[in-house]
Length: 562
Image (cartoon, rainbow, N blue to C red; front, side, top):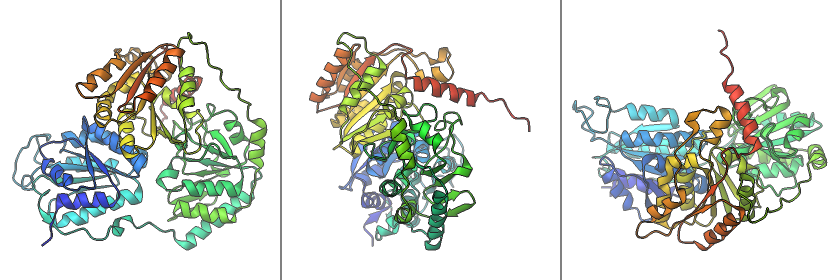
């Protein structure tokens, strides 16, 4: 007789795939399941303030640790978590969402239950989850649980997408088979050798016909585990290498070939010029959306580019699937001929940037000065996490030292993501120095999770840029709805501390005050520090203004008659 229950089977599998933590919000349908998870001593249970924050925290944890998990209750909990799960899907991050559900006898007993929509069909949550996961399973038989749990977890690991697992409250402690070898879940996918060779040959032919090729890297480099392989190709090809904003930190900015962040007319200095000068763009792991193309104004010419994704290589006259990206890049690097033409040209046209001088101590604080002081904090062990909004542009043009990481949610773009994601990231990578930049409007959505940073004593440094509203929306389309009620954000830290916390809240309005606050933050190693930076309402990057105008134009296109 197996000593395993459905709950302990799930716990064992989560531990076997490397999870050290899982994020939870208790509810009556998941309480027994939480007990079974607590019995797994290789994993720690981490409380969240609400299910939305739990899902964002698990997403942030997956960025740091490779995979994340959160456990919620049925319907009211799971539906709240689906925003973060949708973000994990869009950003290609494996997050396992587990929901406790009603007693397995209830669906066939014509019972109306709490936490439901008042219908007799309880399948609606799984059906909704199917649209934002790569696999959604609802267990209704303990004997089937091992198969369904393994199916979902393997899908998450293989596709680097979130999954949904529903476990009835009376089955969490029901006996089931013991786990088999974990290699059944973690075995890697392999390329078809003949297709791989054909893709390499076609790409070699494409590159050989170009006098001025350039590399463009995107965020799927991470989900494809291809960052190292991309660097090998860059070394072999020797051309200029640019990155989409969501890929910042996935290729070293200290590399001789690095040519900046590619974002159309708001690219970093010289980057857009060299992309336009090139006669062939090799796109690796890229995503082209209205945001990443600045309102569809910066898309590569399909006839002059190759697109290499996690399992597909596509170019003029060829299209190959069933290919593992890292294998393709390594095979290509072994055969490609060096062509440094675009790198040499970039080195000629790149503007010479003079170091920004610090203003006088009494100067009122502005956005540029915040960025200058944050730049001085970045080191090899830093992770800079930036919220949707002007924080994107404040962060993406900073210089990352070798080893530093950068986290952005540019595909999903849900305001409020950064605070719980920073919490999850800090739990998953406590050895890294985590710096978060967030606007006041975004902070108001998920502020509670700072209390969890305090609870766990995580020294996260939060720069809260207070300009009294939704600045990113102002630049896209302004209206009175972009104004928000101001808070005393720094004072919140004392409320979150209560009787036992060590969080620090500081309010600054000048250059000197910010510098002094950063010194105090460095001395606070027992909890987070929130520095509320008060700046003028209209103080934002020129990149946000230009980008916002282009996105607004794309949004306002008139309907096409059909």
